[in-house]
Length: 98
Image 1 (tube, rainbow, N blue to C red):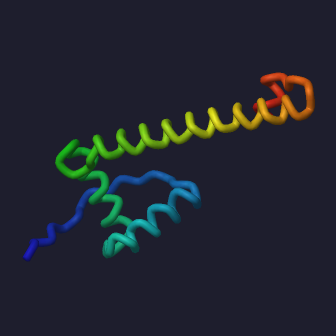
Image 2 (tube, rainbow, N blue to C red; image 1 turned 120 degrees about the horizontal axis):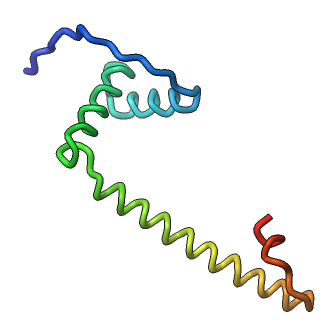
């Protein structure tokens, strides 16, 4: 059984309502005793580097999202060309990004 060490030091920072809710939801989902315990465990993992926080998985997920964004961009441009062909005139790039 783990020995609980008394917590004698404190840090403080502010969160937006959305950030706090995200942290609270994740702490509940992970079964943490409190938001503070959850935040402390996340901080420990971040400070430990690859031991507790898998940066490789995060990077892989970012790469997946980037790939999806490129696919969406390609599809959007394809659809734009179809609309241009149907209408008989090209649309400017600036209007396409609106």
